Structure formats: structure tokens, C-alpha cells
Image (cartoon, helix red, strand yellow):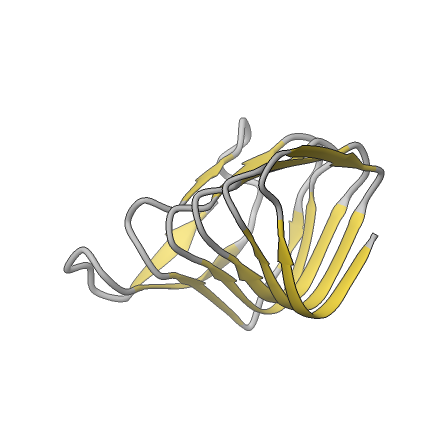
Length: 120
């Protein structure tokens, strides 16, 4: 399933084999569960939804995790984004292997946090 621009809103639970996210916004309070890899090169995950990437994450480009969205990772994840932004403290990344080797600048706005270096 590709998302290459515009806005996709999920309000319920959905499943897909994989997601190629190259721009736009995925938002809503729903849950998207991916059986294959999540390839994320641009765009925003927004609102209070959940994305379960059961075969890992391939991360590049400028990406945004905003407004309380949760990203759950399983499998092998890799990549080095140009910029990774979290826009609220409520946003989270859950990875059973929290040191899969990506070191990047994580810019956090809201909640009084200062920009910082992060490693997941």
C-alpha cells in the first residue's frame, strides 16, 4: 500500500501487507497493522493512532511522528533519516530491540523538551 501525498485517516483497525510512505499524512485514532516492512521516507504519522510494523522499519528522509501517534516495531529495522521530528511528548516508538543502530537527531517540540540526539 503506498501513501505518496494527501491525508489518509484511519478510524478503525486495518491490516495491510506493507506500507511505502513517501509523503503526506497518516492520521486518525485507528490502528494499522503491517505484516510486511514499513518503508518510511517522508511524511507524518499524526493523531492518536497506532501503527504496528511487524516486519520492521526502513527509515530514510525527513519524517514526523506527531500528536500522540504510536509506532510499534517488530522485526529488523534500519536506516538513517535526514531528520526525525516528534511534535509532542505523547508520541512514542516501541521497539523490542531499542538499539537497532539508528542514531539521528530527534527534534521534540511541545512539552518543554529541547532538541536532542536519540538512539533507538
